[in-house]
Image 1: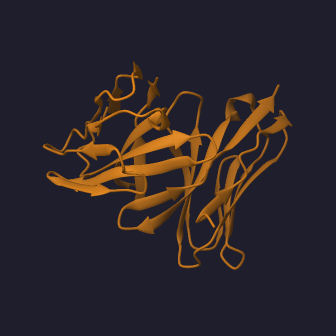
Image 2: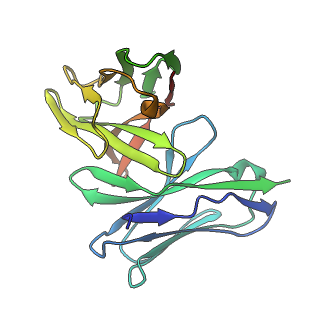
Length: 110
Length: 114
C-alpha cells in the first residue's frame, strides 16, 4: 500500500463549479499536510498547508484534514480556468522528507 | 529575488552515456532534493542533501549520484543512462517561510534516453 494515495483524474469541471480534490494516507502519525499546485511544464509550488485536523481557508481555497479517516481534501470555490493545473497532496514525514501523491489533473472549462 | 534554476531544460541522450543535470539555488538553503516525476507515480525522491559534503539516498537512487561541494549547487549524475530513466527531473530546496517548511522547486529538466 502506498503511503499516500491520490486519484490522478483527470477532473473536468465548468467555470464557477466547486472542486473537491482528495487524498488518503496510511500512517496515523502524520501531522503536517500540504497541497502543491503544478502548472503544465512548471515545477510544483506550495498552495496551502495544514497542521493536524481541521480546516484552513485561503481565499477560494480550503484545505481540510480528517485524521480519524486519514483523509485530506482541497476545495476550490468558484473555480476559474486559471485553476487548471495538477494538484499534488504532500505529507511531511520528518527528517526534512516529504512524500507526494501522484497528483490530480484539473481542467476548468470557460 | 531568490530562485532555483535547472539546466538543461531538455536533454536527449543515448543509453549508456553519463549525464549530469545541474541545479542552482540562491535561497541559501541547506536542504536540497532531487525528484523524478513519472505519470502515475508522482514525485519520487532520488537523493537529498542536508548541507555541504552531505548526501543521502532516496527511494529511487539506483543509477544516480549527487555531490554537494557548496550550498548553492546539487548536480545529479546518471552514471550510465538507461531508458527507464526517461523522466522529468525536479530539483528543490527547503527552508522556512512564514513558519512553514516549504520546498521550492525548479522548473524541471525533461530527459529522454534513447
